[in-house]
Length: 574
Ligand code: ADP
Ligand code: MG
Image (cartoon, rainbow, N blue to C red; front, top):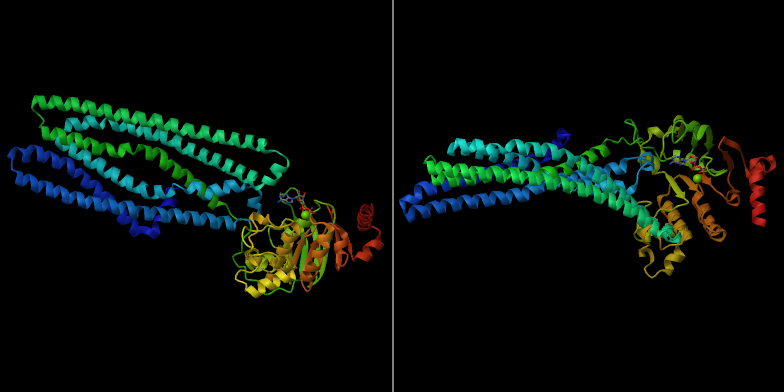
């Protein structure tokens, strides 16, 4: 894992060198101060010459100025480095989210994923910067201070070193526990992010069922779990910091006592004594950073681990290495012996054969759960077939790049997802960068022009998150406008109007008929009246395609279609 982390420094080697070099230099300069004090007390003071003393102070001033400059460089450029790494990790994580396929998202909660790109990466920048810097400075000052302490008084130095095993044990023991704790915390944060996502995203359902109290309870439970996990972290920190502090101060007191004894015995000068106490403080400084070692670093590590996890997930659908961009397609669609299941052991489609000529409309009807949507999801390769193949114009869709395939298939579903933004932005999603004229034309063809003319802000009207400010019919028209703008040769209409009332459906049907003209169209419809004019109708059941033919042929055949038809007519008549 460390090697993987170090890779991120590669583009910033110069920056890293400057930041860490300045940090090291500044650490070394800090060592000079105790030695200067020793010389000051033992050699300069006794001379009682204010001129020399003034000169010494001027030298110290110069050193401090240099050190101040070094620290400013470390603080700013070190963080430039850290933030650059953090930004890159976050960009990679988001890119990965965009790359991953439906199958991954089928098993994820949005809130968890959001956490992995935000909260989990929060401390990486700090760690990327302070980690190596602290380590370098710690090692330098630690060893440097110890060497000087040995020089000043070997006996006291060895006494002071007694603290090291204690600190090492605290770091090893509590640092490990903190890493685990951070991982647990990320899990908890993910859980309650997911909870908020769902409760807020589904606020209309929550309120419609008056289930606010239930949601509050669920959230409170997650929140309390997070609290417990977090409190455990602070317990660990409290204990380890106290142990560390007490250990250091006790050793310091012993050193004072012993040092005083040496002075009385005449084997240590006052200057040595003061310098030694100052050195002990420099020596301790890295040890006092222990809370960074057991708080920030484990947090960064845990975040990096979750990042690596995410990045290691292979998208199960990606461009084949030898994939080429599909040419403009005519839209001859063929399913050849296609077998598919969301889990391999439960096939939804078995050995499916299906052929649609360019420009033809084929309707899929049949009971819910039969696999109609599944058939349509395979064409844009949202999922991969297990056996058989799908071709368009005779080309296997797996040999096309995903972008060139999906860019030629327009999809209108029952649930329209709209982005928070204006009508214009949402239509333009069909072809980014489309001209004003094309957007207006698409809106007109989707029969949105009357609505737009009615709105004071027209195309720039903001439609709220997921388009909450629009009616079902208006959302559907917007989705259709998007496809007009996209102008694909192949079209999938999956229950596009099933959620609408008959009146609205009839109005939208005209726009859909215009959209389907000249395009290969797969249409799934619940109301049979809407697909009567399809070139061919397929009745899909869990056993496969039960029958197919034109509306007239199927009615004459007196099979499942005729029964479905009769049932709907009877219902409509009532
Ligand atoms: P239809 O569109 O005909 O109503 P679907 O194609 O949506 O049917 O579903 C066919 C079967 O596949 C159903 O049993 C359904 O539960 C299952 N299914 C649909 N989508 C998924 C999915 N993302 N993951 C797992 N199973 C799914
Ligand atoms: Mg369906």
